[in-house]
Length: 513
Image (cartoon, rainbow, N blue to C red; front, side, top):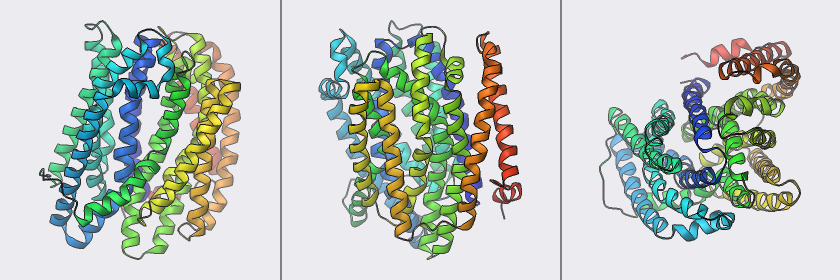
């Protein structure tokens, strides 16, 4: 299968999920706003999400997929299934222990996670209650990540990419049916989060069954394969979830400013769209592809795949970053400014989005370069750079928060992302794992030129459309859609005119041949 076509499958499905996510967030913003209940729920929601990314997705994307692929190709389907069952038993045991301990010690965990909450009566208690309800989501979504790793290894990318759709649908249903009957809307959403984990797990279980991978529950054993999985996975737990670690540091500091947690959350939700559609999709597809090529000693093919992943990701990421930096206010105003979400919230969230967007290419580059290490069973190098990145983020966020409040936190996250991307890219190139070819060296500057020109067009278009953004909901959404679509058309024409992209090459990328 074509690398680009597979990434498009994941990205397109993720786009559908993110559209539903925006609908969900608009509904959440209307019922929660940016007050104490909103801050408490977002901490409760981010907490299991952080551990999911760090403990499950990061570890299994970096360690499980290459090892499972090796068993599948070298020893056959039965051996690969046995390896997956042993991994399931080990993961489930660790998750059950972590969940029990977290539920017991949650008051102390929240005190460290959001120290500023103790200054407002009842806010910390709400956060503890919400997080205890939502935390079991980690258990189910981590098992879902393992199942998605199996399906990705055999070329079935759709089920895993579609799982987040279940989360958004479940939370929308919670808003529609639970919020009206419970006194606290944050409580209703917390129950919705836990239910979503169960739904996603069942969806992937059925998908694995259809693919012929019904996993039986075994007694946990530290076999040589499991020891290797742990050895490779522990560094991946940190390096694979580096962005979540940095966002968590931001949450801790943001809890010291009223409303800051919510402003950063809504901004994060916006720039996560292109990151998920582009960066995560490329990373998900690139890792098994590189693993197969390197297992067959196809070093030239691995270099080709790395270059095309870089080229395609930047072709889509750079204009997205420019757009988010040029029209952040229009985006936030149209999507969120209604109900309890006021004009001041729009202004502050827009500023956070602008700063986050400056780091969007770096976040995507991390997803592009990391598989180059993971496919070679090297998880220690990304771990070292992750540690450096975290240190940079903490130092920058604390320092800049003194001068720029919540915007300094977003700046610290962005700076840390660029440091991590630079270290990963330079080291991979130095070791010969990434050799930029003529095509990527020629097209990257042209992508920047085309994106800058598109940004200028968006700026003037936003000035013209400003009165429409003040209209009814449908008028404002239509105006934003026209503006974004116009930017896409402008960028497509500019990219073709400058030579940043070739229509023939793109068409060939989506071919099955």
